[in-house]
View (tube, rainbow, N blue to C red):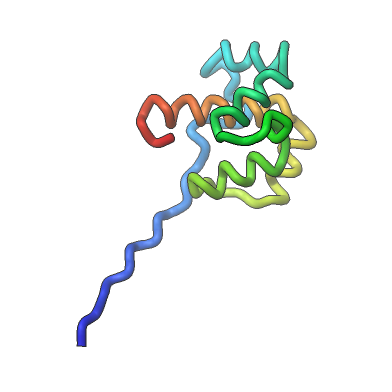
Length: 104
């Protein structure tokens, strides 16, 4: 009887930067502050989604799931509702970091 080994579960990760870590990339912070809809379109474009999907809970949940980032849909909703610009900037910083390291 042959046994096959199952791959080990990958532990959930965190976003590369914190929600309020705007000073880590001031260009993204300014982009989100002065033109949030444009930043949303940039995020959606990076993820091959419709431009209308770039902000809020759904895109954040999809991104978290794809990269096994800790969190919940409720948390995504709260973050998106209470501080959409901070959430969008955090996602864009994370996308940019993953692109630089070849993980995106």
